Amino acid sequence: MDPDTKFPKLKWAQRAECVLMTIELADCENVVVDIDELKNTLSFSATSNGQKFGFAMEMFEQIVKEESKWNTKGRNVIINVSKLDKEQEEWWPRITKEKIKNQ
Image (cartoon, rainbow, N blue to C red; front, top):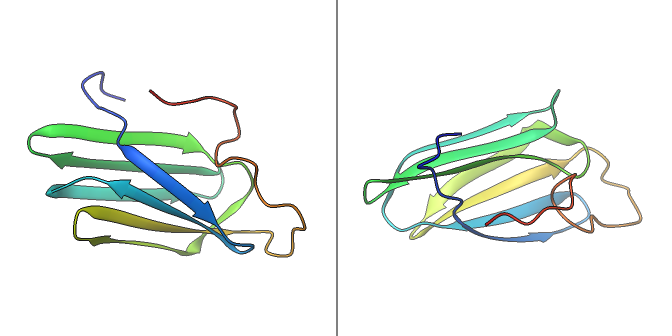
């Protein structure tokens, strides 16, 4: 990732079958969301007021690209990531595979 790229403000929640992510980014343009099932990664990039924002993260468990979707609503980008194992008894303790906190 470009060193000028900032990590956007992100909130997340989950259901048994999916993870819902809300990225707070006003006036965002050039939004790109990509899901790679083989690498089990989600990447996001966008610009807001001339500043680049983005991230690439390895998800906690396997995800399904075809069932996942995203859209922009007002000041937010909403990403719905579909989990592969929808019958799992335990919900994800975090969204990333690694126990790291993004700055």
